[in-house]
Image (tube, rainbow, N blue to C red):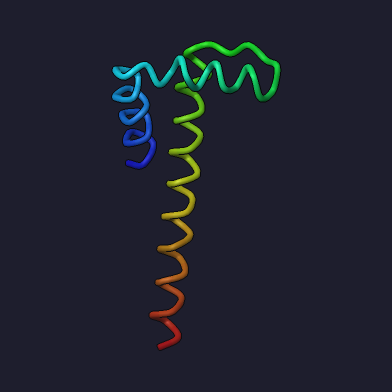
Length: 68
C-alpha cells in the first residue's frame, strides 16, 4: 500500500510542478540529467522502502508478543 501512496504523492506533487524542481535539483547536485520516469521511480523506491519498514515493524511486534 505504501508503494501506491508514494506514487500518488508524486503524481499530486506533479500538479504543482514539483517534478521540475526535483529534476533540476538532481541535475545540480549530481550533474546528471533525469526524466519524469526517474522522478516516479524515486517515489516507487521510496514506497518499497516504506513497505519494508512496515514489514519489519510487524515482524518485531510479533516477536515481542511471543516473548510476552
